[in-house]
Image (cartoon, rainbow, N blue to C red; front, side, top):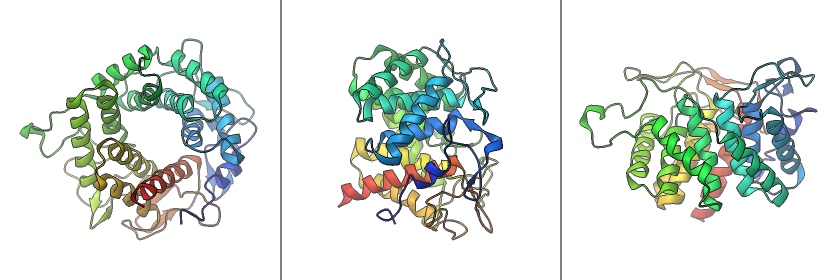
Length: 341
């Protein structure tokens, strides 16, 4: 599958004059819903992992331009742009701020073009001066900071952001018996859950703090085990999951699977433990039909990802978020299989 999919074809079809449209009806982009920074920042992350050529190169540069336009002088970020190119919201520090920082960090360290890297680093530095009260937003931002610190090891802004992200997420004690059955800093799982332990893992490694690293690995182990059933991923439904929820849930969201693939890939690169690379492949298997509905979650004709897994099969709309989740998971699984080979 990985060899034959042209991963950026559908993303190209979903794009317009200003960036990547958010929603699709089947494979057709829905212009009336406009664009969002959330998805264009996600696109910047996955495009930065690819060579600067073809659709990936073009879309990555467009995504960077979108995120730069969304950035206010104080570093906060707008999210909503209508199809005519008008911003419809005020700058803030919600998820899209964190995702923009992730995108800036990825482009600042992984993009082929040194001018793009320099531009993205300046944008990262502007927004890294802000802080968010939301865990996931800080976790996404921390992943961008981890990218920056992987190259610019003494970067003070990235370092401070990483420290503050750890504090906002919280570092659970993996040996505390009081939390043995629910090793999570929130009363319910929500969305993109694996980004929280991934941020702790990245921070522990970047800051040289084994306590934070070990806590992140323990959280991720617990999370993946909780969301594995009969040898396949059975991830949290759109309504979230609490300690009393045990049956398979729906609609299952591709972003949860992609977050697991990202976090397990990071755990593998830091520990070398092949169990983590196997979990990356398990995430791709979810898209290929090893899931609670035994349904493929991607379109082999378009290359798009389906929007959600229901008990009776997929929601076959192929929006930006789900397609980006699929592309990201393919990237991580491809890398895991190359290492295994």
